[in-house]
Image (tube, rainbow, N blue to C red; front, side, top):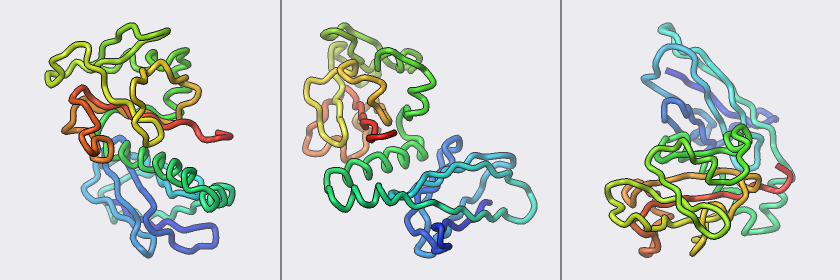
Length: 221
């Protein structure tokens, strides 16, 4: 078991912070008093991530033992410029919240995810190059680059384009190489309608050919 509390720099509890153990596909959110609990964790070291919109994300490692439950205190540092940008622009607030939701889904482990750090580590010249080792994909020529097609049994048509979403909006007709990897904060792939989060198939706007969701990099990051 792992218990903890998340506070700000003044020591006040932070509610609704996203706490995740990506390797175990476990995620939870803090309560009103800033507390969180994970149960039935395997013994050994785990990496824990803590995120809350308007604060600097934290990642730390803790060793789970068979003795008394571990308890940790996590302090998050405020990002005043983020709070200011959100207060002055509804689209800015919506996009930043979308990125936070991306990391939440990644912690839960539904889909295939690429973070900004993953993208930078691969040093790809084209976005399709990031996906070369991802199972269940094939690549087609599309414009001046390549397009991605899922090969799951539900996709009977080999030329069936997945639905692409960019910053929470459906990007009709876009292929993955229309985007530069240097401009991507995060990318998530879903091979079927059943695995696609509800907000990305509302109103019948998604085909059965899979879904790719892309979040563009924030200014200055």
